[in-house]
Length: 348
Image (cartoon, rainbow, N blue to C red; front, side, top):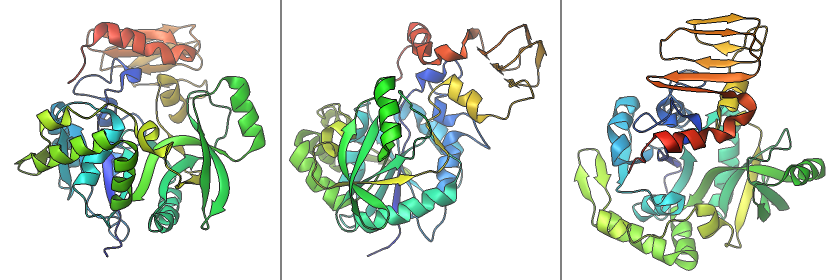
């Protein structure tokens, strides 16, 4: 058996919480929002070590295919194209359907930040030992604050040297519950990163979400190749119910493990998060070069080249992209979707 782990990189999603810069064909994962290069390019770099990882499988929608090809450059990878969005369970089912049953698949979003790559690799290595014992492995982020924007995973009995059997999954909690879980310990943020043997996940899907897997399996079998990309069949894939992998499988299976890890992770899910991760000036401002500030503190200003001036402002975001300008308190970052939905048509 090949000991290399097969990365599966999910490139779907419009990233509407980072509107107006993230939209349509320029979705969040393809933007340089933190660090060097786009979030997608950074994701590819994290799995470039051939001692640990095989060539990645990249899942994307047809509208993003050209951008994926452009940004992946000469990376040795395979492309699998979803004909329409069907949520993470169906996307993962496509990858599982086309995989060797003995292959270990590491499924990860393409739009996350992981600052400590060594810690990530160590966690994956620990998770691989569990996956080879037919655990479905998820990775939990060690929490450093009572966050209400993430789901949580409660750890149960230890398994292996780094993992725990999952006791339960917790929906995004109110603040009081988040504070109680942080104080109690044994809880992790749900990062949406998974590791499993392909044959084990196939069996789990046939048990817990048979219609999803069957649709994906037929869509792969009837798919058409276009150079380096396999386009899953639209008629068959459309039959897959839309559901997340958490709801469809992970919360139902009785052999799910979590590997907690502190690795400088962020889902970069808001402009507030972008501000928090960026290097700020002495007054806490994060701005582009073409910005003038006077008596300002704690602001985020990103512009596509237009000159922006702020006077006497505190803790606001100003995001300029073409004819669209977003101005809001950073504390209201989760409300961006309201504006995005009013301004942007969906990407099929």
